[in-house]
Image (cartoon, rainbow, N blue to C red; front, side, top):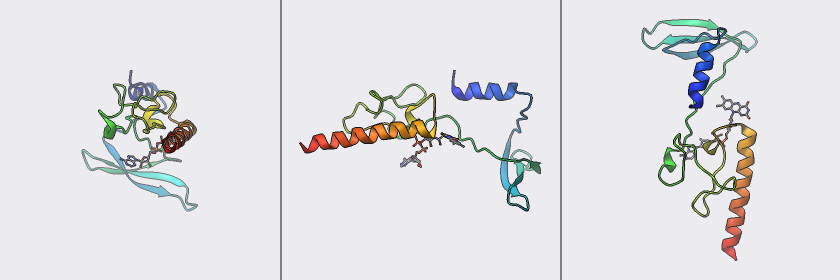
Length: 132
Ligand SMILES: Cc1cc2nc3c(=O)[nH]c(=O)nc-3n(C[C@H](O)[C@H](O)[C@H](O)COP(=O)(O)OP(=O)(O)OC[C@H]3O[C@@H](n4cnc5c(N)ncnc54)[C@H](O)[C@@H]3O)c2cc1C
């Protein structure tokens, strides 16, 4: 099952969370100390606007890996995550893979940086090999 579907099901089953459908944030409203006080919302179907008091905002950007540019060029699973072997190698010598584009599980800054480090070291070794 897709990670986004699992997350959506958990959100909808959680009584403490109230989904606000068909709505966009149009303004972040701070209090006099500059801390988050509310968001201004607009219903995109009715254009009705209202203010919702909130203490913080977390921007989520979805679960689809941004790999369309590599479609057909690099191996990917059915959901578009690139497939690396030995951590960072692609099927093309000299092309290395790192970060969330190949990580369907953790998707964290530190794991992305870790595979980024592996890819950088592989790239350096690859380029050194070309010189000899
Ligand atoms: C709201 C939010 C909160 C998060 N909180 C945490 C947290 O608390 N702790 C944590 O560890 N992780 C957190 N993460 C996850 C973390 O940000 C990612 O795991 C990490 O940034 C992945 O690094 P990356 O280098 O793989 O991808 P990215 O950081 O997404 O970098 C990819 C880069 O490629 C660029 N790019 C895209 N397309 C092209 C193109 N065609 N040409 C050139 N450049 C391109 C993008 O502009 C971007 O700069 C959070 C993510 C989000 C969205």
